[in-house]
Length: 298
Image (tube, rainbow, N blue to C red):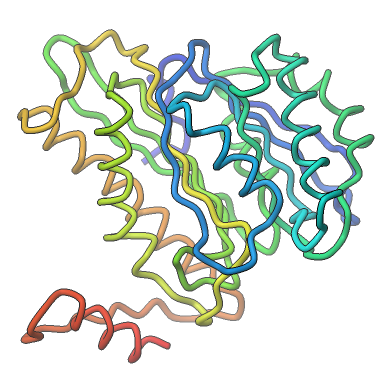
């Protein structure tokens, strides 16, 4: 399967080097939908949450999103009120550069905990980031959000909906501190399908529970975890509604993409040399089976 879903409509990507990482590798990425998309997300259940998590939770209450700015190398976690202000500024400056409303840009960070994010560096890199957006820069984006990952993580599926093709594409990062709910991971699921927000949120949670929330590398939960789904309707296909034949195929596609990404994260686990799948049968409930499997895996 090719990394690049050339037929995903209405999404553009870019990356830049803001010099946040000491390695000098790209550390700033941008996802942009050409139209406002319905959006939903799930976040870490850790008691301690990073500043961008709080900011993005608030922004996504509207059920819409058009841009996502992500930095790697600095998690902007355990940074107090200053960290919250920095996360807000990151979204504000990205929105200004994209000519969007501030509330339509979600922010995510990953990397070192406890160090303040240098917003001046991000602000300085934004013009190049915004002006280099292109549909075929998805691999560049995926690599710009990596931290200890050894390879980029991208998957996609396509389904037929009437006379139109609908594409689901996913990008993720994560290799350590992996035991959801969720893990030190970021996941972005993008689709050119048209899906109403409430149903999109239901699909996301259903699929996350069967994929990202069933993996572990080291039993640790992180501060910055986020899986976001955006549906911009640019395929031209009719709305996907709950209970329809198209809905069943769409959910299968979303879950398949998330499963691929989940498996990639485990394969890329820090120090991992094996991929182990634990299958439990004969349990009284699905929850009991999950508890047994997780205990064995850990």
